[in-house]
Image 1 (tube, one colour):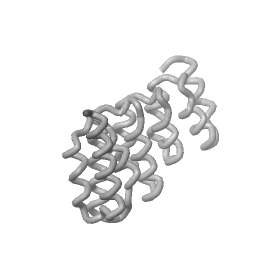
Image 2 (tube, rainbow, N blue to C red):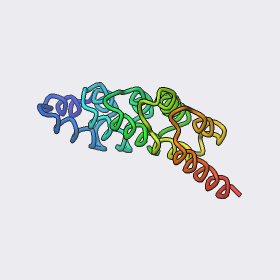
Image 3 (cartoon, rainbow, N blue to C red):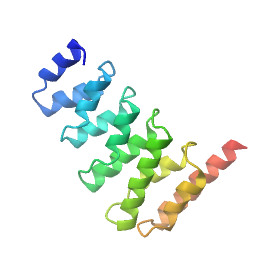
Image 4 (cartoon, one colour):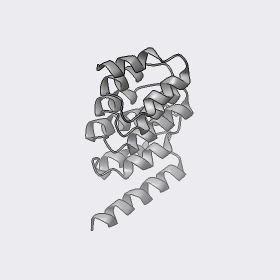
Length: 154
């Protein structure tokens, strides 16, 4: 870590300090990696919106757990992140699938975001519709998003 980055970490005294540093697009990747280890789900979400967050941190954030609502929001933000590559998106897909299998949470927004990502095939995402936690509304949205994607390709 550079001297300035190390200094920034020394001045984190409140959760807001973590949040503000996570939003800073000018901090180094090592600081962002450090912040991914903090216990605050809102910091994870800010990291998932920061365009400077490295791909490996996005992949690590996929498995973070807090509450069904926060987890679904985090997965959505990762699925929408411009640096999320195929490996990260497959991680999100796996997490969404696990949640839909147990029916504990309903990460429907993340499902729709994944359906719009060209890094994943329609077949990979379509399988989510058959899982126990998939509602009729989610299945309709998924079909619609995949159909939009199909017509955009033509």
